[in-house]
Image (cartoon, rainbow, N blue to C red; front, side, top):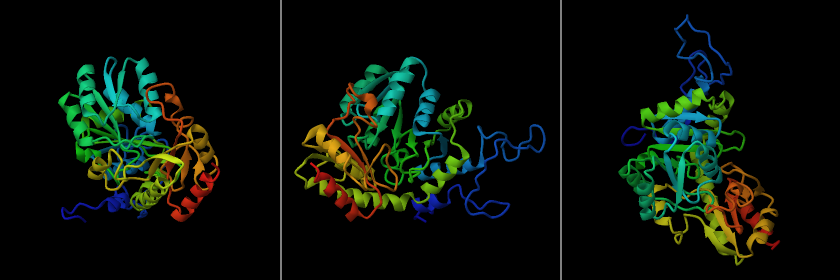
Length: 386
């Protein structure tokens, strides 16, 4: 317990939502697969459960855990990270509203806002979130209802000052949404910095084992929670009981995993700095990173994601990406295994030809929890192919 008698992060990760089950005393919440529930009588539900699209005990346990990890009052889980983002946009915006977002947001986020919600009358303005004057100007000019913040950003690893951006959003009557997927709640707590809403792809660090897709919204605002929870129920975008069970299991070890991810990522970033084939190492833990001071202030550590740009351009990036053995060439991130990604043709292909396009010489590394000596040896042999 802390001095305020509040359980620490890993204690909450293990115990929130996991009270022993009453019938048997099971210490892990059971997996409730039933789609429907028998009431005591008409209009008198057992524990509030009637149909699993709306309520399910396993999903409720996960949602309690997610809220506890982000220090929020309300957690709502979804079938995917983009499903969670969609619930925010549909629940909080109407035709004619506007979103100001980072000019390097995840490609799927940009596609969702620009193509799907854009067609429904929602406007958007990309802006460099590290330029507070530019953000202020965009909020003022558009009358935006939402400021969408992603930090660290995917895959350029830019750091946005959450506290300063929240203040700007509120000054202009906008809500501040923070995508906390890259950092995880272990390293960064946006609600404590004033954010109105936190969104996650729980597929990544929260689930942590590359075996379950999911998303989450966490907030302290009951009105916001009611609106996005209604989308979960009415649009059928909830996480399944089995997905909730797997995500909850993974999140219990988030703290210990993130410490190892950070240790390994720091070593990988330092190794890359010493390579003559490399032009830029993008990692907020490096003192010369433009966002290092802000990251040090708002993050516990600097995360497990490292991006790198190669002097040999696209050909060199492709060669390295296709030559690693432990770093698996694949989409996604945040699992226990190390992954190598070529964003221009993979995760961010949807923004090619726009101002959000990713450099073709860039690789994104999701550094796993393997022995770091083996990871560095793998990179050594891959770079030897250049």
